[in-house]
Each structure stands twice: as C-alpha cells, then as structure tokens.
Image (cartoon, rainbow, N blue to C red; front, top):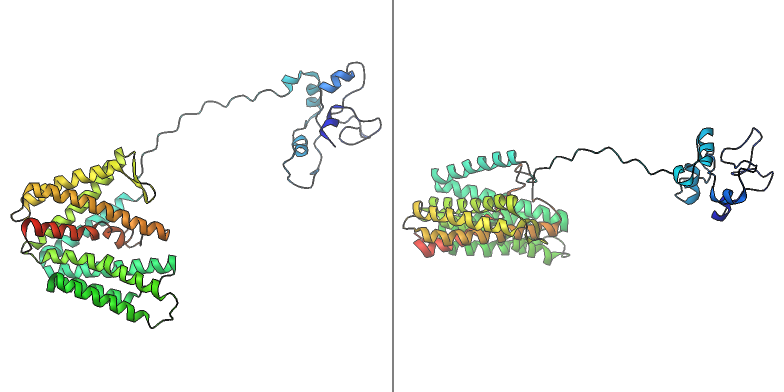
Length: 377
C-alpha cells in the first residue's frame, strides 16, 4: 500500500486496515455522515489498529512498522483522535524533570596508587639496604633485575610479534656483563657485550633459518638495551663514594618521574608526544626538570665528595631529559607491541621493565657527568 492511499477511505465492503469486521466498527475507521466531508477526511488521517501479530514478519524499521506500532490501543482514544485538532493529537512531550547535575569526577591516575606506593617503598628499602650493606650484594640485585627484565622483554616480543630472541644466552651474558663491568670496568663491559651478541648468533643457529635475522637482531638489541645500559650502574658503584653516586642516580630519576607525574596530573594541558604517550604533557616535563634540578643541587652539594650545587643543576637537567626520553622510548616499544605494561610482577607498576624504562638510559648519563665533575675514583 502506498503512502498516498493513507488519506482516503477504502471502497465500500472492503476489509483490512481501513475496513470493518463482522463484530462491529473497526478502530481507526472514519464514520460516515455529514460531519466528515471529503476535505476534512483528507486532513484527518486515521491511524490503523494494532494487529495481533507482526504484520511484516520481523522487526523491520520501516514506515509500515512505525504506523503499526503507533495506532490507538483503546476505543476512547480513537474518537478523541478524530475530534481533537491535528496539533493536539500529537502533543509535544513534556520535558523531563530537572535532574541534579552529576558530581564532578576527580582525576584518576589510572593505577592503584596504594599498591604502587607500597611496592615502591618496599623496593626502595631493598635497594638501599643492599646498596650500603655490601657492594657485591647490590651487584647481584642489578643482575637479577636484568635477567627478569630480559625475560619480560623477550616474552612480549614472542607473544606479540612472533620474534624468538634467545633468552638463555641473553640471561647468562647479561648477568656476566654486569659483573664484568663492576670487576673490570668499562673494558670488561664491552667485552661481555660482544661475547653476548656472539652467543645470541650461535644459539639461534640450532633452529630453522626462517626468521633468523629478526630473531638475532632483537636479541642484540635486548642485550644492549637492558644489561649493557645497566652496567653503568655497576660502574658508578666502583668509586670510593659509589653507593652515594648510585643513590643520587636513583633519587634524581625517581624525583624526575614524580615531578612529571605531579605537575602533569595537576596542570597538564598540552601533550608532549601524543602519538607515543598521550598521558605525558609539556607541563609535566617542566615539572620533571624543576624537581630534578633542585634535587640534583642538594645531592651534589651534600652527598657527593667534591661536588658543587651548580653541577647538581646541570645533572638534574640531564637526568630529566634522559628519563623522559627513556620513558618515551619504552612507550614506543609497548605501543608497537600493542600492550600497556611489560609485565605484572609489580602491582601498581606493571613489570620490572616498566620501572627500568627511565633508569636504563639515565645510568650512562649520570656516570659520564659524575666522571666529568668529580672523577671516576
């Protein structure tokens, strides 16, 4: 039935939507008589009755279905619809009662802060205790962190990209790299790095050649990214005031991250690198620089032998830059892998690699500036 036929009465004796039934008048049918002449019948279009079942065999959203669902339900409504003006038949819906404005939501950090603080304090106690009890114990802590970080990184590479970087030579070579850096200095670290890369190449030869190049490339990258950069922490430890240098390195990195988080969470409006890490802001970077420079001046003045406050300002500036770049670098890796965290070992933090992201690239920067400012011994 076309839309144009809805405004005219049906032929006499015809049943259906517009006709009559044996039981009496059909709801929605226009009565005969002088009160309803032809012009008025054209202006007033009666609505069809509601059928007992679906008229079109399904829940189709078309004009016919809309007419079927909007017909009158009771006899009274049929007569009212014919007697009231057109604008009264479909009155405007009454506005809803005014609802109370929703309470403003507080900013969320996106993590369980209580768990993050608890885990952070626990890690800090373990690190500081091992750092000042015996240097060799802290070297062991570094080696364990390196092995766990390598396990997280290689696991995510295999899960998300199908890259099989050999973990056994990486773990053994990474731990040996940290120990060699502490015992033999920078020369020992470089030799261990070269041997680890060679071990990765040889170890991968035991498997089929498909994917060999990408696997060994990822393995050499992992060897450089995690254990080799961590070796500079062991190099700092070899100095006479090594524990204080390492403590300064850790404090400045943590203070930089804390300043970036606090200032960015409270005042952040302009994104720093939206394609890499949308949560980081320029205001947060300024907070990291300010906090790290103040902390650096205090640490160099009171913790480091022969250190000066102005050296701490430069050190803090460099730490803020390297920590931010390190954080962005790991964010780039995680974004490429399509993951939020590298692991789940640390509640509120993610994995070990999610805590090492700022520390690893900052270690060689602090080591180099310490050597320039106060020497290596």
